[in-house]
Image (cartoon, rainbow, N blue to C red; front, side):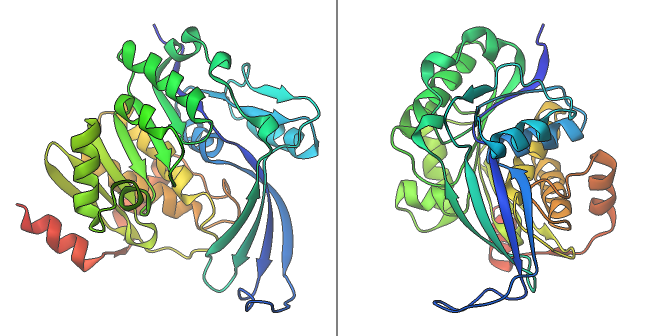
Length: 317
Protein backbone atom coordinates (compact mmCIF):
# COMPACT_ATOMS: atom_id res chain seq x y z
CA UNK A 1 0.00 0.00 0.00
CA UNK A 2 1.34 3.44 -0.98
CA UNK A 3 2.47 5.69 1.84
CA UNK A 4 1.80 8.93 -0.07
CA UNK A 5 -0.75 10.15 -2.59
CA UNK A 6 1.82 12.14 -4.58
CA UNK A 7 5.60 12.12 -4.94
CA UNK A 8 7.14 15.20 -6.53
CA UNK A 9 10.68 15.10 -7.93
CA UNK A 10 12.12 18.33 -9.32
CA UNK A 11 12.89 21.97 -8.76
CA UNK A 12 12.58 24.32 -5.86
CA UNK A 13 13.80 27.92 -5.79
CA UNK A 14 13.97 30.83 -3.40
CA UNK A 15 12.79 33.98 -5.14
CA UNK A 16 13.41 37.65 -4.58
CA UNK A 17 10.28 39.46 -5.71
CA UNK A 18 10.78 43.03 -6.86
CA UNK A 19 7.46 44.89 -7.21
CA UNK A 20 7.43 47.85 -9.59
CA UNK A 21 4.57 50.23 -10.53
CA UNK A 22 5.22 49.55 -14.24
CA UNK A 23 7.83 47.43 -15.95
CA UNK A 24 10.72 49.77 -16.85
CA UNK A 25 11.69 50.57 -20.41
CA UNK A 26 14.80 48.89 -21.83
CA UNK A 27 17.94 50.55 -20.43
CA UNK A 28 15.69 52.65 -18.20
CA UNK A 29 15.75 53.37 -14.49
CA UNK A 30 12.76 53.08 -12.16
CA UNK A 31 11.99 52.92 -8.43
CA UNK A 32 10.56 49.73 -6.97
CA UNK A 33 7.77 49.47 -4.41
CA UNK A 34 8.82 46.46 -2.35
CA UNK A 35 11.34 43.60 -2.21
CA UNK A 36 10.20 40.24 -0.82
CA UNK A 37 12.08 36.95 -0.25
CA UNK A 38 9.69 34.18 -1.22
CA UNK A 39 9.98 30.37 -1.67
CA UNK A 40 8.96 28.87 -5.01
CA UNK A 41 10.07 26.40 -7.67
CA UNK A 42 8.02 24.28 -10.07
CA UNK A 43 7.64 20.96 -8.31
CA UNK A 44 8.05 22.17 -4.72
CA UNK A 45 5.22 24.70 -5.18
CA UNK A 46 3.02 22.08 -6.88
CA UNK A 47 3.56 19.81 -3.88
CA UNK A 48 2.56 22.59 -1.47
CA UNK A 49 -0.63 22.98 -3.52
CA UNK A 50 -1.27 19.22 -3.29
CA UNK A 51 -0.76 19.26 0.48
CA UNK A 52 -3.07 22.27 0.89
CA UNK A 53 -5.73 20.38 -1.07
CA UNK A 54 -5.48 17.58 1.48
CA UNK A 55 -3.23 15.03 -0.21
CA UNK A 56 -0.38 13.21 1.51
CA UNK A 57 2.81 14.35 -0.22
CA UNK A 58 6.51 13.57 -0.47
CA UNK A 59 9.02 15.88 -2.15
CA UNK A 60 12.49 14.95 -3.43
CA UNK A 61 14.93 17.55 -4.69
CA UNK A 62 18.18 19.28 -3.85
CA UNK A 63 18.77 22.46 -1.88
CA UNK A 64 21.89 24.51 -1.25
CA UNK A 65 23.37 24.91 2.20
CA UNK A 66 23.09 28.72 2.04
CA UNK A 67 20.49 31.09 3.48
CA UNK A 68 18.18 30.63 0.50
CA UNK A 69 18.34 26.86 0.93
CA UNK A 70 17.42 27.26 4.59
CA UNK A 71 14.46 29.47 3.65
CA UNK A 72 13.27 26.82 1.18
CA UNK A 73 13.50 23.98 3.72
CA UNK A 74 11.69 26.04 6.35
CA UNK A 75 8.93 26.81 3.86
CA UNK A 76 8.29 23.08 3.36
CA UNK A 77 8.40 22.21 7.04
CA UNK A 78 5.00 22.46 8.66
CA UNK A 79 3.13 21.86 5.40
CA UNK A 80 2.83 18.15 6.12
CA UNK A 81 5.09 17.35 3.15
CA UNK A 82 7.62 14.58 3.76
CA UNK A 83 11.11 15.96 3.01
CA UNK A 84 13.16 13.07 4.43
CA UNK A 85 14.88 12.52 1.07
CA UNK A 86 15.58 16.14 0.20
CA UNK A 87 19.33 16.39 -0.38
CA UNK A 88 21.34 19.34 1.00
CA UNK A 89 24.33 20.08 -1.22
CA UNK A 90 27.31 21.27 0.80
CA UNK A 91 29.07 24.38 -0.45
CA UNK A 92 26.37 24.96 -3.05
CA UNK A 93 24.02 27.92 -3.47
CA UNK A 94 20.32 27.20 -3.73
CA UNK A 95 18.47 27.90 -6.95
CA UNK A 96 17.44 31.53 -6.95
CA UNK A 97 15.29 33.83 -9.05
CA UNK A 98 14.78 37.56 -9.24
CA UNK A 99 11.20 38.18 -10.28
CA UNK A 100 10.08 41.61 -11.41
CA UNK A 101 6.33 42.02 -10.85
CA UNK A 102 4.48 44.73 -12.78
CA UNK A 103 2.01 46.09 -10.24
CA UNK A 104 -0.31 47.43 -12.96
CA UNK A 105 -0.94 43.99 -14.51
CA UNK A 106 0.41 41.35 -12.11
CA UNK A 107 2.59 39.93 -14.88
CA UNK A 108 6.13 38.90 -13.96
CA UNK A 109 9.54 38.65 -15.59
CA UNK A 110 11.88 36.00 -14.19
CA UNK A 111 15.68 36.01 -14.03
CA UNK A 112 16.96 32.76 -12.57
CA UNK A 113 20.13 30.80 -11.80
CA UNK A 114 20.73 27.19 -10.83
CA UNK A 115 24.30 26.03 -10.28
CA UNK A 116 25.30 22.63 -11.64
CA UNK A 117 26.15 21.41 -8.13
CA UNK A 118 22.39 21.18 -7.50
CA UNK A 119 21.90 18.59 -10.25
CA UNK A 120 19.97 15.51 -9.11
CA UNK A 121 21.49 12.30 -10.50
CA UNK A 122 19.75 9.06 -11.53
CA UNK A 123 21.68 7.20 -8.84
CA UNK A 124 19.94 9.31 -6.21
CA UNK A 125 16.52 8.01 -7.28
CA UNK A 126 15.52 4.64 -5.83
CA UNK A 127 12.72 2.25 -6.65
CA UNK A 128 11.28 2.25 -3.09
CA UNK A 129 10.94 6.04 -3.30
CA UNK A 130 8.81 5.79 -6.44
CA UNK A 131 6.77 2.90 -5.07
CA UNK A 132 5.88 4.96 -1.99
CA UNK A 133 3.29 7.02 -3.91
CA UNK A 134 0.12 6.61 -5.97
CA UNK A 135 1.20 9.27 -8.49
CA UNK A 136 4.54 10.75 -9.58
CA UNK A 137 4.90 14.40 -10.60
CA UNK A 138 8.10 15.59 -12.30
CA UNK A 139 9.49 18.52 -14.28
CA UNK A 140 11.96 18.68 -17.17
CA UNK A 141 15.13 19.60 -15.29
CA UNK A 142 17.74 16.99 -14.33
CA UNK A 143 16.41 14.92 -17.20
CA UNK A 144 18.33 11.67 -16.57
CA UNK A 145 17.06 11.56 -12.97
CA UNK A 146 13.40 12.21 -13.82
CA UNK A 147 13.69 9.79 -16.77
CA UNK A 148 14.71 7.07 -14.33
CA UNK A 149 11.88 8.00 -11.96
CA UNK A 150 9.31 7.92 -14.76
CA UNK A 151 10.63 4.58 -16.03
CA UNK A 152 10.28 2.99 -12.60
CA UNK A 153 6.78 4.42 -12.24
CA UNK A 154 5.72 3.06 -15.65
CA UNK A 155 7.12 -0.38 -14.78
CA UNK A 156 4.91 -0.50 -11.68
CA UNK A 157 1.79 1.11 -13.15
CA UNK A 158 2.14 4.39 -11.25
CA UNK A 159 0.75 7.33 -13.29
CA UNK A 160 3.18 10.12 -14.15
CA UNK A 161 2.33 13.80 -14.58
CA UNK A 162 4.92 16.21 -15.96
CA UNK A 163 5.35 19.97 -16.00
CA UNK A 164 7.61 21.08 -18.85
CA UNK A 165 8.05 24.60 -20.17
CA UNK A 166 10.93 24.33 -22.64
CA UNK A 167 12.97 21.71 -24.51
CA UNK A 168 15.53 19.78 -22.46
CA UNK A 169 18.21 17.54 -23.94
CA UNK A 170 17.21 13.91 -23.52
CA UNK A 171 13.57 14.64 -22.73
CA UNK A 172 12.58 12.15 -25.43
CA UNK A 173 13.61 9.49 -22.87
CA UNK A 174 10.99 10.86 -20.44
CA UNK A 175 7.97 11.31 -22.71
CA UNK A 176 7.26 7.60 -23.44
CA UNK A 177 6.68 7.05 -19.70
CA UNK A 178 4.38 10.04 -19.16
CA UNK A 179 0.63 9.60 -18.64
CA UNK A 180 -0.35 13.26 -18.23
CA UNK A 181 1.71 15.81 -20.15
CA UNK A 182 0.80 19.37 -19.12
CA UNK A 183 3.11 21.87 -20.80
CA UNK A 184 3.51 25.59 -21.28
CA UNK A 185 1.82 27.05 -24.35
CA UNK A 186 5.18 27.17 -26.14
CA UNK A 187 6.51 23.63 -25.61
CA UNK A 188 4.28 21.60 -27.98
CA UNK A 189 5.02 23.89 -30.91
CA UNK A 190 8.75 23.98 -30.13
CA UNK A 191 8.96 20.18 -29.84
CA UNK A 192 6.90 19.31 -32.92
CA UNK A 193 7.61 22.36 -35.15
CA UNK A 194 3.84 22.48 -35.59
CA UNK A 195 2.48 26.02 -35.16
CA UNK A 196 -1.12 24.98 -34.57
CA UNK A 197 -1.50 24.07 -30.84
CA UNK A 198 -4.23 21.51 -31.55
CA UNK A 199 -2.10 19.72 -34.12
CA UNK A 200 0.99 19.98 -31.88
CA UNK A 201 -0.78 18.27 -28.97
CA UNK A 202 -2.16 15.59 -31.29
CA UNK A 203 1.33 14.97 -32.72
CA UNK A 204 2.82 14.60 -29.24
CA UNK A 205 0.11 12.20 -28.15
CA UNK A 206 0.39 10.11 -31.31
CA UNK A 207 4.18 9.86 -31.06
CA UNK A 208 4.51 9.10 -27.34
CA UNK A 209 1.14 7.62 -26.39
CA UNK A 210 0.41 9.62 -23.24
CA UNK A 211 -3.18 9.43 -22.00
CA UNK A 212 -3.56 13.22 -21.85
CA UNK A 213 -1.62 15.87 -23.78
CA UNK A 214 -2.42 19.33 -22.43
CA UNK A 215 -1.14 22.89 -22.23
CA UNK A 216 -1.75 25.87 -20.00
CA UNK A 217 -2.66 29.11 -21.79
CA UNK A 218 -2.09 31.75 -19.11
CA UNK A 219 -4.93 34.28 -19.14
CA UNK A 220 -6.84 32.14 -21.66
CA UNK A 221 -7.13 28.98 -19.55
CA UNK A 222 -6.07 25.49 -20.64
CA UNK A 223 -6.46 22.96 -23.44
CA UNK A 224 -6.27 19.16 -23.29
CA UNK A 225 -6.55 16.17 -25.61
CA UNK A 226 -8.01 12.92 -24.23
CA UNK A 227 -9.32 9.91 -26.20
CA UNK A 228 -9.30 11.82 -29.47
CA UNK A 229 -11.32 14.73 -28.07
CA UNK A 230 -10.15 18.24 -27.22
CA UNK A 231 -11.29 19.99 -24.05
CA UNK A 232 -10.97 23.74 -23.54
CA UNK A 233 -11.46 25.48 -20.19
CA UNK A 234 -11.48 29.31 -20.04
CA UNK A 235 -9.51 31.12 -17.34
CA UNK A 236 -11.14 32.78 -14.34
CA UNK A 237 -11.18 36.56 -14.06
CA UNK A 238 -9.70 37.66 -10.72
CA UNK A 239 -7.92 40.70 -9.30
CA UNK A 240 -4.45 39.56 -10.37
CA UNK A 241 -1.59 40.78 -8.19
CA UNK A 242 1.11 38.33 -9.33
CA UNK A 243 1.14 35.52 -11.90
CA UNK A 244 4.25 33.91 -10.33
CA UNK A 245 3.62 30.24 -9.59
CA UNK A 246 0.22 30.06 -11.29
CA UNK A 247 1.36 27.20 -13.52
CA UNK A 248 2.88 25.33 -10.59
CA UNK A 249 -0.37 25.54 -8.63
CA UNK A 250 -2.28 24.44 -11.74
CA UNK A 251 -0.13 21.29 -11.80
CA UNK A 252 -0.71 20.60 -8.11
CA UNK A 253 -4.46 20.92 -8.59
CA UNK A 254 -4.24 18.74 -11.70
CA UNK A 255 -2.56 15.99 -9.65
CA UNK A 256 -5.35 16.25 -7.09
CA UNK A 257 -8.02 16.05 -9.80
CA UNK A 258 -6.42 12.97 -11.39
CA UNK A 259 -6.31 11.16 -8.05
CA UNK A 260 -9.93 12.10 -7.32
CA UNK A 261 -11.06 10.76 -10.69
CA UNK A 262 -12.50 14.03 -11.99
CA UNK A 263 -13.66 14.29 -15.60
CA UNK A 264 -11.34 16.20 -17.93
CA UNK A 265 -13.69 19.20 -18.06
CA UNK A 266 -13.77 19.36 -14.26
CA UNK A 267 -10.02 18.72 -13.98
CA UNK A 268 -9.16 21.70 -16.18
CA UNK A 269 -11.73 23.97 -14.53
CA UNK A 270 -10.61 23.06 -11.01
CA UNK A 271 -6.95 23.53 -11.94
CA UNK A 272 -7.68 26.90 -13.60
CA UNK A 273 -9.53 28.05 -10.48
CA UNK A 274 -6.68 27.03 -8.19
CA UNK A 275 -4.16 28.84 -10.40
CA UNK A 276 -6.35 31.96 -10.52
CA UNK A 277 -6.62 32.07 -6.72
CA UNK A 278 -2.84 31.99 -6.45
CA UNK A 279 -2.67 35.08 -8.67
CA UNK A 280 -4.67 37.08 -6.12
CA UNK A 281 -1.70 37.22 -3.73
CA UNK A 282 2.02 37.97 -4.06
CA UNK A 283 4.52 35.13 -4.44
CA UNK A 284 4.74 31.69 -6.02
CA UNK A 285 2.69 30.18 -3.18
CA UNK A 286 0.96 33.29 -1.89
CA UNK A 287 -2.59 32.40 -2.87
CA UNK A 288 -2.63 28.61 -2.61
CA UNK A 289 -6.05 27.64 -1.26
CA UNK A 290 -8.01 24.50 -0.40
CA UNK A 291 -10.74 22.67 -2.24
CA UNK A 292 -13.65 24.77 -0.98
CA UNK A 293 -12.06 28.04 -2.12
CA UNK A 294 -11.54 26.62 -5.61
CA UNK A 295 -15.11 25.30 -5.73
CA UNK A 296 -16.42 28.68 -4.60
CA UNK A 297 -14.55 30.47 -7.38
CA UNK A 298 -15.80 27.93 -9.91
CA UNK A 299 -19.37 28.66 -8.86
CA UNK A 300 -19.31 32.44 -8.99
CA UNK A 301 -16.48 33.90 -11.05
CA UNK A 302 -16.49 35.41 -14.51
CA UNK A 303 -14.34 33.59 -17.06
CA UNK A 304 -12.22 34.81 -19.96
CA UNK A 305 -12.62 32.65 -23.04
CA UNK A 306 -10.49 32.52 -26.18
CA UNK A 307 -13.07 32.43 -28.99
CA UNK A 308 -10.83 30.58 -31.40
CA UNK A 309 -10.09 27.77 -28.94
CA UNK A 310 -13.73 27.59 -27.85
CA UNK A 311 -15.10 27.47 -31.41
CA UNK A 312 -12.64 24.81 -32.53
CA UNK A 313 -13.50 22.58 -29.58
CA UNK A 314 -17.23 23.06 -30.14
CA UNK A 315 -16.82 22.28 -33.85
CA UNK A 316 -15.53 18.76 -33.10
CA UNK A 317 -18.83 17.75 -31.46
